[in-house]
Length: 481
Image 1 (tube, rainbow, N blue to C red):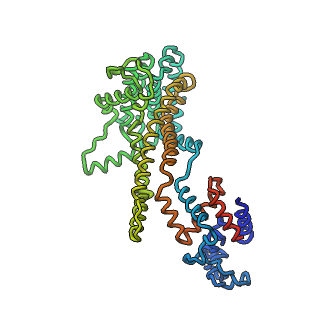
Image 2 (cartoon, rainbow, N blue to C red):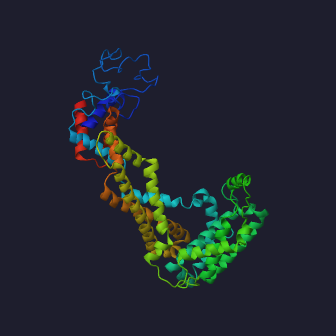
Image 3 (tube, rainbow, N blue to C red):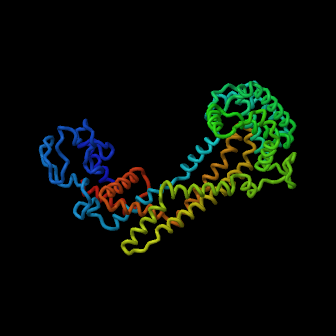
């Protein structure tokens, strides 16, 4: 089906140095026009070049012949005589328009979606990327390295049972993470976003955090989930204090207009209400609340799918991605504006259309699909991980369990939206605004060339292109060859 494309490409490669790949060389896809590069032998700014400027057959001394009429036609306004689509049937023209509209919402494969969401999940914990050396030292080589301490816990059969309980594993992974973050921040660091504890409160913060680390270790050895949750919350709250020089500089700017008193590590550890709020949030997220709503020493409830919906981003996360869909359509892609503008233009010609409201309806369905897909997908990922992921922390390594546990909800939510997107697109079809944009391009000669280029690139990339669009490209290439 694409043999004529390859044949024409080979011919123009030999004649001009490229078919669409070299922007400085004339070819079918750039209208046989050169760019204005003085050093380019094909440029009209080159004194040695006198051709390609007219459709009437300019003489070129380099070739010693008249340039055939039509080679410069792409610089002209479209007419019935010189249309790029001349020779194509209405069905073939429409196929190119439809193919362009489809390309504005590219389809994504399962593996591509999975990889993209995995990357998104990886950057959700930027500390591991921004401070890899400190993270490694805090995990393996520091004096109070997290790995060294947790290896002692892995020898305790009672603690292993506690860890493998899905209701406990989430809070224990968070305890591992907060222990590791605290040890890492005891190391020297540049301090753009967060200063090391050595440089805070004249060194007093370092001693306080070392005491908090020991308190967390004692709680972990006791196996009491209430104590573990409380000490984890204290380290978590203290970690939010005293940013790096960027945030301190911003606080100075704000201090010119309002009284700013950034909390210190000492202040954070003395903030009873703030710590209480973190304890409640951790307990709610990790399932350590008993039926009376109080923090339980050990987990007593089962991990259910409905619980995971409540513990994750849940409806809030879904509404966030629903809003993103509307913002993208309205502000970045301006789909609503394009659709309503088309309605106004048609109304001037006495034609009544409802493209604007149709586009709003399409976007609403897709946005709702995003919300439902994210909510259910995130919960499904967390639920599945709770069933088998707890063993990663106890049998393999706490770091692996922590990383996967933090990412699995994000990946699951992304996959849920991907599946929902497949369903909503099947319901509402391609966006009306995309069809309008493609149809408008078909009205101009430059736009027609863009439609042809788009379909050719999709064919060469192995994307799915309709038989009618492929036939149109083949006919165009055969005519030019």
